[in-house]
Length: 293
Ligand SMILES: NC(=O)c1ccc[n+]([C@@H]2O[C@H](COP(=O)([O-])OP(=O)(O)OC[C@H]3O[C@@H](n4cnc5c(N)ncnc54)[C@H](O)[C@@H]3O)[C@@H](O)[C@H]2O)c1
Image: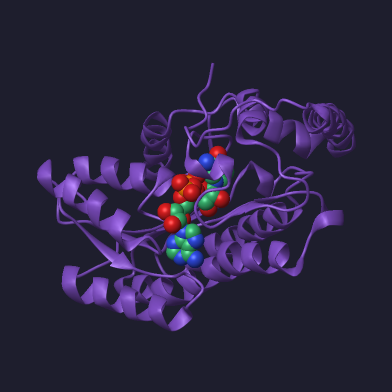
């Protein structure tokens, strides 16, 4: 098979990193673009040490001009962009009552504008090639309510809408588009990540971990393997872990019942957060990753 090239934003960590590593194992040249350049360089070096082809690039997805420059550089250096994982994202947890402007602006700037800028940078190159696949990372929060994560849910609902539209427009040019909707995956973002965080009363990491554990976070490498199967199949909606498809379907066919279900989940969560806040001896907090039971 001829040479294939993938550009991955957020490629230094978590999902972007795992996708890069798995693609490199398949012989794809990967470009890991991230605000965390040093980390991206370490990942690229480890891929190269294992016999793969990879390089790192500094990118802040909020900078449209830099995005265009990088996309042009990748196409020039490598000859094509076959896969574009428009994946960088952040999350800021907290109630809307506690939101400051940052809780809206930062999340929408990275997760929504950044995705739009990425499409503007890469899509024309793919149209000129008459080939390529854009995979925008949304979330199950792109379909479901996310109390304590409204700006995140807003950005991810938008990414679902963008991708559905792009899939239809892109088909006329030979360009594919899919939306990646992870459930909960074991990555740093579950505890805020490097550029996200919380507003309002700070919830200790130990409590956050306990709450996330219930969503059975998936190992990120196993996740990447499943995602790439769906990319190969040109699935429009890539939902992994697979069991989230039942929840997705329930939301689509019974939206009012789904709201009632999520209201119950939220009430339970609120009660636990209140109890944790009242605890005079909060559990020790660490930055260790959240693990499924
Ligand atoms: N982990 C999950 O459970 C989960 C669930 C649903 C959706 N997602 C989405 O998956 C994507 C990847 O997240 P992850 O879980 O790998 O988290 P992560 O924190 O491990 O990785 C996010 C990466 O994005 C980079 N980044 C952040 N802001 C950036 C910017 N302005 N410009 C360039 N790079 C930037 C970070 O440096 C980091 O390397 C995000 O869009 C996230 O919203 C994750």
